[in-house]
Image 1 (cartoon, rainbow, N blue to C red):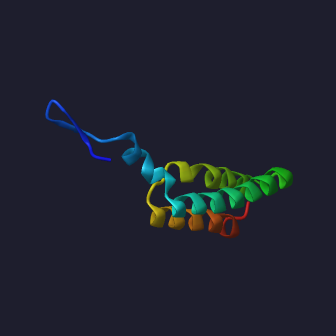
Image 2: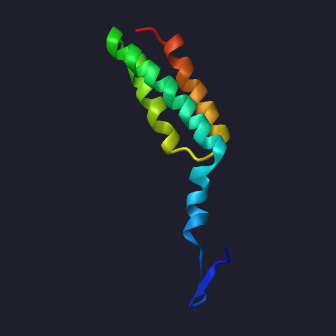
Length: 88
């Protein structure tokens, strides 16, 4: 698709802005971290433990806000490791 010109301003088509959310790697990593987050959430709720519960919620939510795949993986691995090092 070619960008349209409107009074000297280049207007990009909607596909260009939405494309970064539809990358295969981001979707798969988000699915993986969301699934692990659901497991942490269920475990934390049943055991009444705050750290796995909070990390589970964070793992399910953060892929929506991070668009860089490398940063997504680093943050996801850090959130997975937190319950193993922080015991409350």
